[in-house]
Length: 138
Image (cartoon, rainbow, N blue to C red; front, side):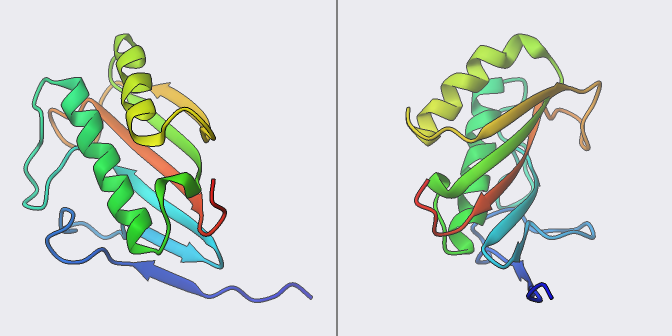
């Protein structure tokens, strides 16, 4: 019989990431696998960072991903899969540049990019879902 896994809600420290006025969690840890909700370019006060500026929105999104993963005891090196939703595929190369900035050149996660007509809030240019296996070291 398979071992039972406990689900733990990951709650980053208050003031480190935007609050959740909607019914979801930033992350859910099951065993050593962390499932992140789609992260976007909102700051700690629910303000959109970089309106109209894809690079700044991508950086804020990856800062939020880093905050959630670190709150679960991991690092960006533990991210094994990402799905990125873009409202405009012309930003793909900039997306790759920002991912290199945050992830370095080695050990990139499996990745999918999807073009979306719109995202959950006006002005968002991307949203990134991620999965991490905490403690893998990349």
